[in-house]
Amino acid sequence: MKELLRLPILLLPALAVTAGCTQDREQDRMHASYAEGLRRLEAREYPQAHIAFLQAYAWAQAKPDSLYMGLIQQKESIIFGRTGNYRAELEAGRQAYAIFQALDLPAKQCTAALTLAQACYDNMKWHTGDSLCASVYSRPGATDSLSIQAMLLQADFLLERPVPDFRQARSLYEQILLVDRNRLSAESFYRYALCLVSTGDSRKAEPLLQELGNLSFDNSERDYLKARIAQAQGRKEDAIRSLALAYSSRKFLMQSQLQSDVFKAQSDFYLQREALERQRSQILRLRNWLLVSVLLLTLGLCTLLFILYRNRQQERTERLISAAQESRLMMEEAERGADSYRKLFASQYRAQFAEIGRLAEPFISESRIGDFKVRAGKAYSERLDAILREIKDTRSRDFEQRLDRDLDHIVSRLRSQLPQLREQDIRFLCYLIAGFDTSTIAFLTDMSKGNVRVRKHRLRSIIAGSEAPDKVFFLTLVG
Image 1 (cartoon, one colour):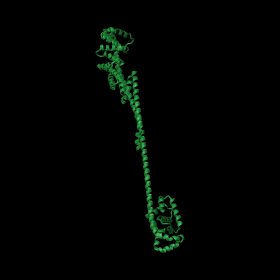
Image 2 (cartoon, helix red, strand yellow; image 1 turned 45 degrees about the vertical axis):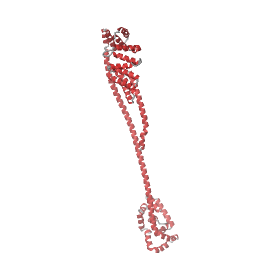
Image 3 (tube, rainbow, N blue to C red; image 1 turned 135 degrees about the horizontal axis):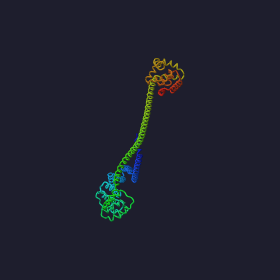
Image 4 (cartoon, one colour; image 1 turned 120 degrees about the vertical axis):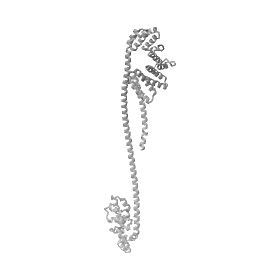
């Protein structure tokens, strides 16, 4: 099981590398989505830009990256303002401004303040918008582009509120003219002319209006401004004519509302399509993770099965070794028991036949066994006859039964496992098992000592070459 415990440790470096690669990949995706949103915004493809910024914001929020979150919210506010979604514009502008204010980035905070001011004006929150613009152009020594943009934004919307403030708007326009005249557009010049006329300075407004009249193109917003200027000058017919031409501004407002509706519809469509794409990607990722998990589980299962199989084989080997050791100990014990039995029989019969062997020795060497038997028979008549009948007579089973009973059925096993042996061979093996010496066996079998040794060697060869299960045991007893 130690191998399985090592697997998670071995996977830690791979998981760390994977996590690092995942973070880098998410950051690259965030930058790519943000760049795509900027490109779409510049091309006025607002729904597509909105979707791209949503993706970038999700990755920036997961990181988290507050700077990109603020930039994305600022761009979202611009998109909502251009598509007529003023409430969403205000909320996005507030979030961007709060983020840059928390990050303490003055330049970013100024741009976010202008974006939020635009949103406040679109939602008719005039005082809030004025405060934000003033915070930008009231900075010490602020004569940069952002300050001019803030003054221009406030001046334009000073004329759009229910009670226009022509004097303050004129003051702001004149400050811009002192810094950079080229920052004012044609519409801004018309508004400046309206401020001049409305504040009683029509003489100064005439050359400006004449110069603006030489422009070769018009639009509904300019016609509306001309109508307001004519009305302020008391030229009612010109005012009515300009209002008639500015009728398209109503149509423009309707188109603006329609554009807002279209934006919402397109955004919903792209959001749903993006959600489907995310679900599809998630399903693919889940399928890949499932495949990887299945492979890892399969690998772990195979490893576990291999370890179990190896442990089982090891246990089986240990059991076999233990059984072999036990068998060896049992064999040794059996050999010691057989040897003890053999010594017991040998001592019993040796005591009875030691004298016979000693007395028979000179006669055996001189081949006079018969004379010795006659003398021995006379000397030991009854006792010797009884012993000889028990031991020598092959028809008598007393001797074999005694050996068979006391030595774990040795004679019965000899007969069953070695059927090729004759009765004389069985009796000769019984003499060997009983522990009789060569002289005694020669006396009992009417053989010379040399023939006894030859016969013993032949019987051992027969046992050793047989397939008897108790072959080793037989050889141990025979000696």
